Amino acid sequence: MTQNKWVVWRFANQRWTPLGFVYAETEAEAWDKAHKIYGANITQLVPYSRWLDEDYYDRTRVIDFESYASSRGGGRFSSDVAAQRLPNTSEGQRRRIAEQQLRVSQANASRRESLRKEYDLMVSRGEIRPPTRIEELQRTARGNPDNASVQAARRLLRKRNIRW
Image (cartoon, helix red, strand yellow):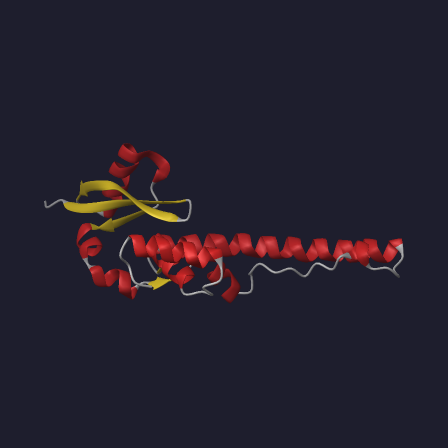
């Protein structure tokens, strides 16, 4: 009976955070122990050997939720037509346009909700992973240098001696 070391992870505020380690023989036993120690904050358990494997992070596809949702037809979009600014429309036409916009936005919201559940499931299985804070900063730093967010990302990366 050898006990394996498991790394306990939590995903909150768009970030992965390691909570600690648990020793158990099976994954189910590790989940039980982790829930007793860390409560309901647990999102994923990873074997310690896989956690140490640096190539694991290179093999896993990195994608944030917005990119994932956009690639599957659930991205944020603005199809709003300012119905109140249409000068030559009647009140009935404006009402119909507003109702149509409401239906489209509700359908998009429900689509995004189902995509969020699908994304979280894929993350918990380890098929994909959200980008780390550094990866997000590197992506932002590659933007137009006139943008304040790009300049701030570059400053933060330069402070940490990380190339973008």
